Image 1 (cartoon, rainbow, N blue to C red):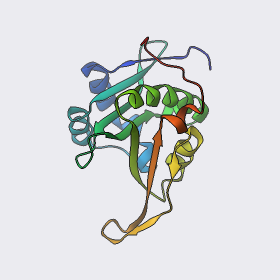
Image 2 (image 1 turned 180 degrees about the vertical axis):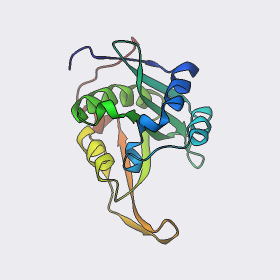
Image 3 (image 1 turned 120 degrees about the vertical axis):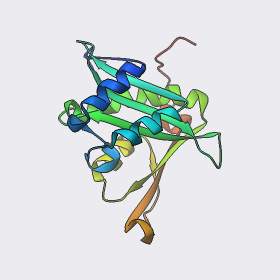
Length: 167
């Protein structure tokens, strides 16, 4: 991977920028559908960590965040938002995500989310990074089959560790 992106803790300006260009942004958890701006802002407000990838020109291109789960604060509820720039570069998004998830796993022993089985691209991305993808369970209220996806340090690092920030 070249130095095409820089990962840093996100600022309110990064979130505002991505909110302003939301029609160009993609939610991998939602088959590339647009994300309502109010949902993004609420999610950011309750997140313990928010990271941004900026292109070499400084433009924010992706956000990753994690919030403690209400039922178990040791587990981080993971979320992610990536611009169209990564549509043709899934491997680059995987590598950036691995670095960010490593930082999140320093705070939370486990990261997880529940994803609609129809969101094939998101599931493929997470599986490629090392996430466990549990069997789909029918969820009649959501009119979908949902899958629990999770990762811990052992699954992410497989013996090695590269971090973003010095310890």
